[in-house]
Image (cartoon, rainbow, N blue to C red; front, top):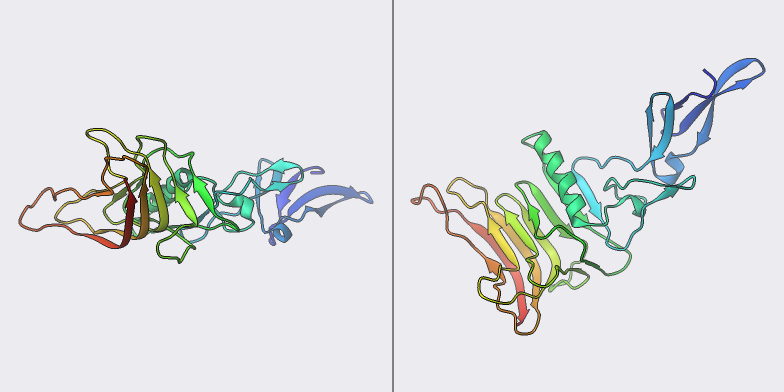
Length: 239
């Protein structure tokens, strides 16, 4: 039917147009050339951010949503173009958790990357990593400084659950008063759980802070078989 749309095998938008009394499919939007995917439903099609592959998601604190044809696209966590990356860790973790929930063998690998340093301030605090959801960055420095996770005063930064990992990020917290939470809490410790891991993370406290850097709970369940956490290359300063 003239006017209907579909996606080509190459990922472009095809529109049915009348030509010489016949209807022909015409390529009307080059999604693939813009590193985008194509989505079709109910006779219409459009360029969209491609779906991340094999559980690899990307976050960029400095990007803005990709545009195509004057329309802003919904980020998917794909690496390219930059505007298809998530802008918050919260969104990336939600997508990663959905991926791991789909199959017990799925592992979500979230990578922070950007053309310039950046800070995460607009998150649902604390950012909570469930089993098989991992966050790392492209910052190889030790201690890391390129990407800073900075919750508001009084809020913790992360909860790292069993079977998850956090690495290559800086954390800046302002924790005060009795009962202040730790900047990072390790959770889900049971005798049978897989170890959580925190590697190459720099935690900086505001002046006069009273919270802990990392809270490690006692194991629960079968007390005769303790559980473990892997903590390596940590830097804690300030307070």
